[in-house]
Image (cartoon, rainbow, N blue to C red; front, side):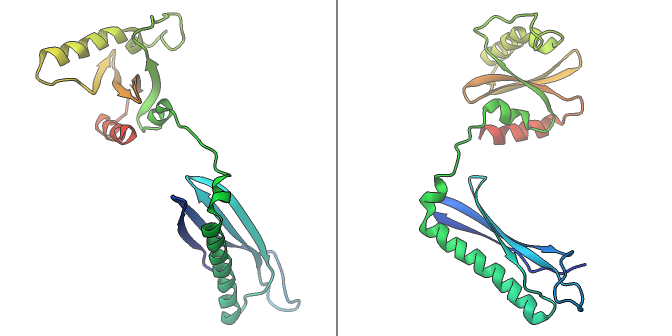
Length: 210
């Protein structure tokens, strides 16, 4: 297997943000240098700069020098390090310019809940609005069609036991498992998959809500 110069990853803190820099050497095995000798790969040195999960800058430089000896290999690794450190210094000095490229992305509570393993469907429930039984989201969904009954049961349990106000309720209706929970100021019904591990779902739910 072709040995290539090692990459580098580091973070730079500036303007209250953490910038993640990653530099890697991408070799081109098909490139042939120094005719008459063994094939020696050229490559590219690529550095990406990310902040808040978004790539805000990418620089790519072609590296044409052979590294068919330990000395030349060390020079290639040095080139990776030089590019990485150089860009880290630029980020530290001009952080505001890079932050200007960051797009504010808002992930809804519904989207976050839908990513939990074991959740088949997420439905936002507004108890103040009447449900239209003809809607696809309600039709054929025994849980949603009886959601007010479920809500009344949860309230009854909260008011007539020592459990206090319930933050979530787990149950099953017609062999369909579900979880009713509040998140981001709204109430959501989570239809669970048949093979869902309820304990694991609740554990991930706490992370989402936290």
